[in-house]
Length: 112
Ligand SMILES: [Zn+2]
Image 1 (cartoon, helix red, strand yellow):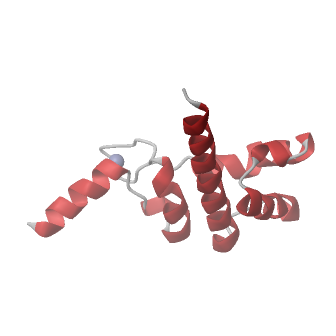
Image 2 (image 1 turned 90 degrees about the vertical axis):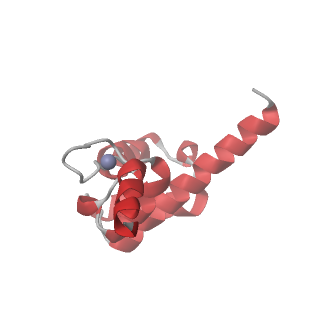
């Protein structure tokens, strides 16, 4: 893998993390007290997990990261929704989120 490509990929990951962390802060989803929210705010700003202390990282692993794993609400599917859809799912309603494939199917059905 070239250095440029690696750089771009980590840039993309950071942007994704920023977006997802911001969605958590704005939606008020976080529990675990002020610590989790403070860390989410920091991540929304920097997008960098390696900037966290080990104590912050433990809070992240326990209270923040699990929110980034959302199951598709289609009972016939049950896949985890794709990373790029997670931020908007958190903001809308994680319980009714659909994965990319089911979203596509739904759009197809609405067209017919
Ligand atoms: Zn699905």
